[in-house]
Image (tube, rainbow, N blue to C red; front, side, top):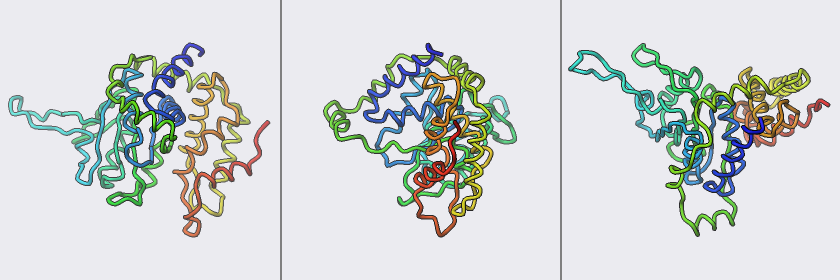
Length: 310
């Protein structure tokens, strides 16, 4: 575990030079990746989301694809399509950009619900179906989707079923004044990302994912603590719907990855608390009279009311 942790630490250190002041967002993105989940980033354009995605792909020696969402984007622009080959007399499938290890879906809420729905099978089943033919996606497979604040012109709400496919939802935020001054002094380093040496490859990545899944222990007390949180969301008077079983698994998976990143092979309550604010808020649905409630604060108060296991 120590050797693996050193490699992960080296990735964090190396990429922090390209993402000034975004260490927390970078760490959360890697936790999401090694938990075999997908990541939704809600933020304003131009804050380093593309740099984050490219940096992870290059550090792990994985293929990278980018999809720019617009209102006229079609599902086949994502999945690919079958084109008739007059030489062979058959239809030949041409894969779309979703057939990469890491896929950046930029401004996902600028495309229509029909196109958004094309991602559900890919994210949930790691496969796509085109013309009644199913094609497996490469492994590992990780989607980083970016979302503009819904108040902006020309955006579409992501439905709850789509939001639930994302393991975590985070915000990068503006850099600090000092970090931004450093960017202004030295300029963009995006081009340098393509020259960094990978710290590992796809096979090693999947071994680490398996290691986190199988080797990090979650005690019955911790499982009971997770269930107490889940049940609290389902009975809270402010909510019309609490967390699903998928949400419960998301808490457990991210807590295990968080423990692993900290060099432990067991989960403690602090792992749950650290991850809850990024796993729970986008999954809960408020009653109309509570719609203006701040989600992060609501989750924080809900967890504080639950007894922490010794």
